[in-house]
Image (cartoon, rainbow, N blue to C red; front, side):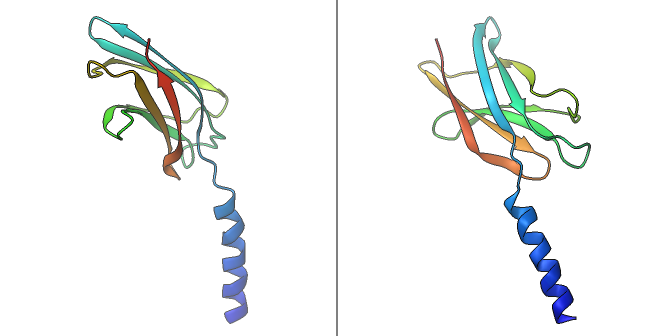
Length: 118
């Protein structure tokens, strides 16, 4: 039994090492009458309902979350893909926003995309 468990653990180690976070390929922001609209382009090896990029959020540089865009389904055959969120209240004087992506299996990624507001 000991050899079976060690073999099982050995199989899990490569799986953890091949984690697949969503990659933020780009983001755009534009002001509007009802707040900002942010559009984010993501790439992820979505495999179906068990593993897909399921959201992104807009943060201030201090980590304050301004908005979250939930992605309600996998985009297996649409890569990369762009989705937008409107009506984001950005505090006056803010000149930078941070975008962070999420996947169903990995949660919120550590990698971010920084954008400058015009």
